[in-house]
Length: 150
Image (cartoon, rainbow, N blue to C red; front, side, top):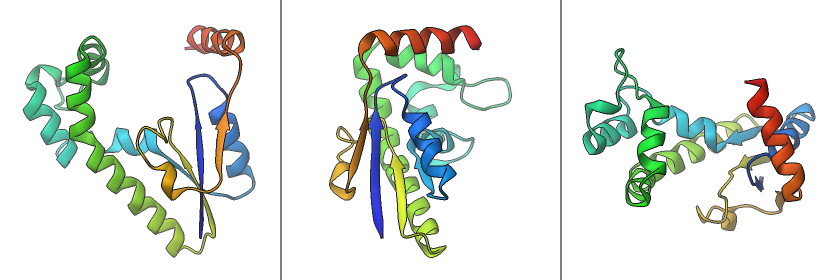
């Protein structure tokens, strides 16, 4: 089995590259989706985050208010590091379970879409690594269009 690393900055075109792989029946494990899943109500990640940040980060239905949590952690590097430490084991585990599931289905090539591939030290498990890059001007233009479309 080959695990291909896919990484790149925000608004670099990584999703376009990911969709190209998918269009050729090459499965993509998206770390952002795994990260969202580890914050679902009553999971280990959820419980750890609520214990660390308090009930103030919860919506009325008990789910994590991700925009509120985002405001907290992006305004305080220490809290961002805490959140990363709390969730990293759950995210890594979720990624590996998804890779195992796809391997058991018979896939020989799996793409691992991780924006922070090198920072997460997952690059040592991937070969080759595809880095999607665009110049800053294009990146900002694309980002502005995405914000307008929301």
